[in-house]
Image (cartoon, rainbow, N blue to C red; front, side):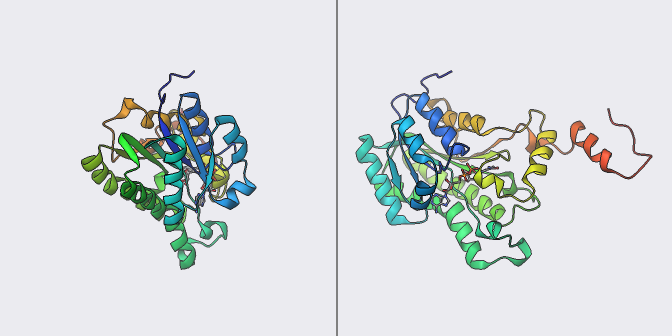
Length: 281
Ligand SMILES: NC(=O)c1ccc[n+]([C@@H]2O[C@H](COP(=O)([O-])OP(=O)(O)OC[C@H]3O[C@@H](n4cnc5c(N)ncnc54)[C@H](O)[C@@H]3O)[C@@H](O)[C@H]2O)c1
């Protein structure tokens, strides 16, 4: 059901690769809620992904840009304002990648060139987008900028590797720039810390199937899906959240507040080699 929450709003959505992408689901929902936007991704992702199908559905132009390149971002923002006919109301940063993860380099044996790339793509790109938009005065008063994060920014999760450091930096950038944007432009900057989700980026996380089962068992409401994350993004883009800024919002079915759940304990005890484990019910 749509509520016209984004009627008349203009945006830029980064990171829709294929129909599983969180950015894809967000674009579909933003469109249904009345928004107009441009879509962007790297030239390679545009060539090999499915973004043109999404573009057709949402009547949204696709503008190639590498989110680590300031000239690309400047062109993207300028073109988006030209196409959409004015300043931007919302931006979604749904961008992440680690070559260390891809190449199976463990955290105690990182390749530092890859590590720099991880930080550049997954965190600094957010600063670059915010800075380019600040210089161009591209975002409207009461606009909203959202980036997607993960709980590995606060807690250590086996296998998340250098992406954990990138997410910590990403959340810090949201607070630091959120202060300046709020103070000087009345614009919101937030991150959403999403449950593990089976997307292309998500599938790269070590042991993703076990992780998905664990977090689902630990979360009283279960894992949040990509569609549900899209709902959270749309809410943050809408005028219903005008005083929410510099926050990292856990969108994870309650996982971040749990220590142990009944469902997880049952599963854990099953694997224990002991006859005197207390029964769990
Ligand atoms: N899937 C999960 O479990 C999960 C959980 C929490 C947070 N997140 C975050 O959500 C965001 C979106 O990921 P997703 O799960 O939808 O996966 P996805 O693979 O569909 O999206 C990642 C996107 O980043 C883009 N990208 C990579 N390098 C880029 C660059 N240099 N410039 C521009 N774009 C670039 C990719 O092309 C892709 O579209 C990421 O920040 C990810 O870390 C994902």
